[in-house]
Image (cartoon, rainbow, N blue to C red; front, side):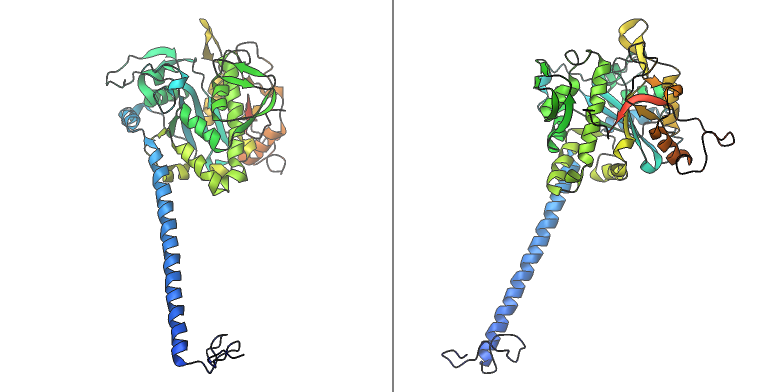
Amino acid sequence: MTDSAGGTFGRRGAEGSFGPGAGASASGRGLIRRRRRKWLRWTGLGVAALIVATVGAGCAVYAKLDGNITPDETAAAELARYEKERPTSIARGARNILLIGSDSRSGDGNARYGRDSGTERSDTTILLHLSAGRRSATAVSVPRDLMVEVPSCRRPDGSRTEPMFAMFNYAFQVGGSACTIRTVEKLTDIRIDHHMVVDFHGFKDMVDAVDGVEVCLPEPIHDKAAKLRLPAGRVRLNGEQALGYVRARKSLGNGSDTDRMDRQQRFLGALVAKVQSNDVLLNPVKLYPVLDAATSSLTTDPELASLRGLYELVRGVRDIPAERVQFLTVPRESYVYNSNRDQLVEPEAQRLFDRLRADAPVVVTRGAPSDSTTKDRNSLRQSDGYSAYEEDYEEVFFGYGKSGGMRADDPATAVSPPPTFRGNTASEDTCE
């Protein structure tokens, strides 16, 4: 085929590609080469611009998330002041993190939950133990009404309190996270490696970031104080509803703080399961708001107050099976002098603290304790049963069990089974 100028098209030319043939002029071929070089330059510039924009966006996102976290420098200085009296870690590789839920009304959007009195209390406190090797995570709730020895602590105005036997949440109210940490360490003799404080707003955002969390309600809820109106059955709670659900006390269950902590633990288990699901962790569109919510309204010790610090902490946690993410409450009962307060149940509480300190396994079950005659004696006796879950734990930690090796019934290598406490795991369906 020839064009009107006599040039040949449609056959392979000397350049080895379809285009101007042998009869094309040198000026025509030069024009095409110049256009090609110009197109390649613009393409290269476009790719470079895209790379720069992507890297820039990534840096901006990192800087935003990193800047969300507030370092708790005041607590770090106070804890350093009392370093000599603090417990030492005896389980290499294990980590103990104190999670504190603040009821402060001064934060963004928190005023709607009550009057800002200028103080804040630990509405929820959980001791999270991560085993060495990250084979398990055990979250232990500490009741806010538990009667404990609170040491002398520094107030926000710089003055100091006197040591006092008081309710546990008094520690956070008068001395913040440092006082709470020292109180927990005095109570348990467990070294707290890190701590995190989150307020109402941060909790709500976290739930909304995962598109809500499903719970099972045995009966409808109509609670004016918590602003809750929900049907019975499976319900997906948004952030606002979830906050009301975990904070409600008088209108749900038996109205006790015990029942509320059980509800909080079941909800946290469902939240962990939702975050661990692939549609969240493997989807950048869903993962970013989760990270943004998890870092916003978060105050941590300086070592954790960065994305790198948090990443180092959770890197191994994400692979813990849901059935080994477990929740329980420290064994306690009604305080002998006031039934509206709590006291530890011994020796069960000490047994729990000893095992966490040594990074030894504990086991939880949803069954009610056979000796439950008080407000909540939530430690089960070993004679109450020996589950397959316990055997699985011993196989992992001690090397005997279903796969062979040492056996519990071998007198030469016998190891006592881990104690069992009432609680739940992140793998349990709240409707079952």
